[in-house]
Length: 285
Figure 1: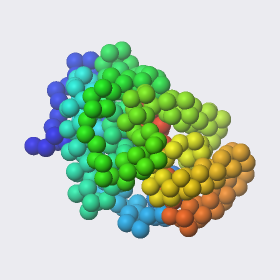
Figure 2 (figure 1 turned 90 degrees about the horizontal axis):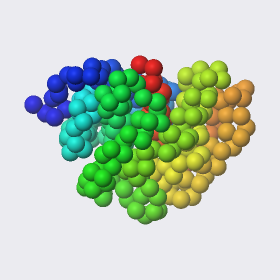
Figure 3 (figure 1 turned 90 degrees about the vertical axis):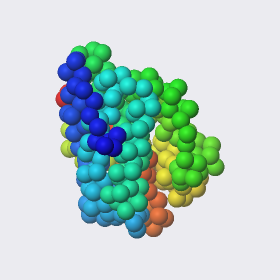
Figure 4 (figure 1 turned 180 degrees about the vertical axis):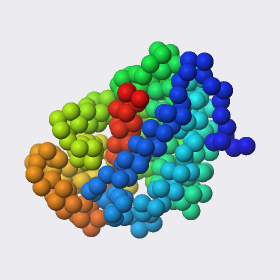
């Protein structure tokens, strides 16, 4: 039996790992369904991608449907990072089989998987759901181990990280995901509390991320100039009122056309967006 299919014994604290797993998958689906998203795949467009569409993402999500439950089980059982990593490797293999070798969710397998494990561990320790910021910081429990784990030096993200000298997802995780704690989750929470519908709040949060994150996908596709251009477009959108301003969808659709013309896609920001939605939802679930 593969690691992905294995189940750990139920945690005596009663942590509902299956519920956390469903929230993780639902968060990735919410990110996919959200539109318009400049350069990214939605149900209506392939964005800047020639090799994937919404169907590719849905096949990937189906392949990952047990992974987040399994890694939450491991987190609740206080398993070492080696166990979490084994689940992640099996999940990546399942994703690639389902998509014909296309990387749809590698970043989310790492970051959202760690957050699901951390959320489950916090619940075991406290007996209730933890605030989003606490879950982010709880990932540091495994920091020494995942910092020492081998990297795929040939992946586009790692090549971009080394070429441009910017932190990647491991560095973000080791720091307790400050971009989630200090930017993405507060932006999303504020947007929802101030009346934006889910998709509008997600778009607002995505553009805040694009404006401020050194997105490795943007660096890989457009280099430093492409990243700077994308950040400028996102800042202008936010400064004009973002998703709170009338006509925001039309403006964002236009920005998206420019992203596609430049073949830019903020995939790292999209992963962080899904993580943000998960962190908010697990607080009340």
